Length: 438
Image 1 (cartoon, rainbow, N blue to C red):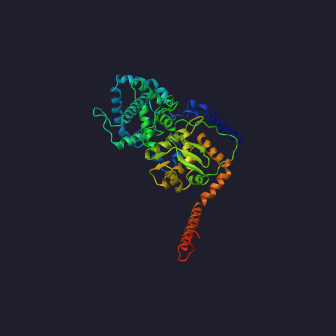
Image 2: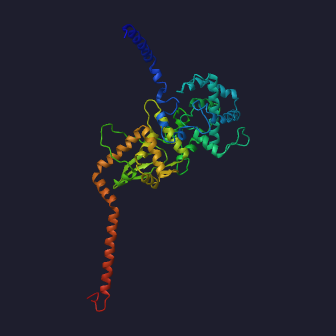
Image 3: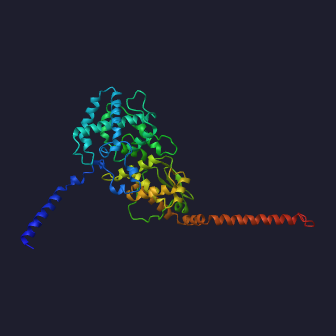
């Protein structure tokens, strides 16, 4: 080989390598994230979309909010309804449409920087119009949902069927279907919207008691969300229990099902609220207790649950991973369909799916989600219970695993005593038998 040609090739190739390395700046690497650990709005990673029924979990049915699904033909039917909703939202206030439009324009640049997707093909005017229509639609829809009824007769937008309302409710809380909260804030500076009431109504779908949970826990109204899904997630989580996790290596309890917890004397019980952070481990005189928030698992709630967990995973910096922890804890407790039945019996799970389908749902998403502090705390507390009460746990295992034999033996002894009493009674009643006081 010609050494001059080889040197020339190496020089050209090395130049491309150096240019590639120099162009990969920390700014580019951080493109998916902004400050404070908040992510840019981005698409669900391919490995999450590889799970079973991912399309039903992450893709919108009826409406596109923001740019991620804007070009899908099957979603364009809602664009005219968005415009009508925007007109209704603005005209039902004391301000003119141009005032709302001006407020959105002021934050459009900041909103554009909140997306990880390359939006260079979309002009500033196109982007701003999208933010305006989508923001007005969301706020008008929340107003309608918060009032717990369909649009009044004088609304210019068409009356939506209950099925459409459910489909829209599902779509607007998908992680890929979000617009930055700064856009909604800009619009709400001119018109008050019952956002808290809407969120209470939304998260009541998780509550098996069908009671709309209040949002009065400390810090609920001070949280600055990134988008609507972030805010709903924060309210559904609620406050975390303050408990330190020992970072030193410690033995962990090898429990892989709800049935095994019952075997070692740890009883499952429903928490007092349906908030996902309401999880704890307690110790009684005889038994232990693991309380978990009861949850209704329907089409809406399963979809929102997975999207909240996906949002946590996409965050930059540190995260509490509260929803992911909740999913992981439930997944740990499910090894067979019998474990799902045990969780149903304890009134913790209320699934619309079969036991086997519910098991598959949790087992399919859990391997892809992070383990949060809540997960580590609960598993550590369960391990501590097992380590500190070995004698009690061993005795409980013996009783638990042999209960039917003990009951059977007890029944046999009782039966024998009954027979003996009957024989003695017959002996005493025979003619010529000894008198009772002889």
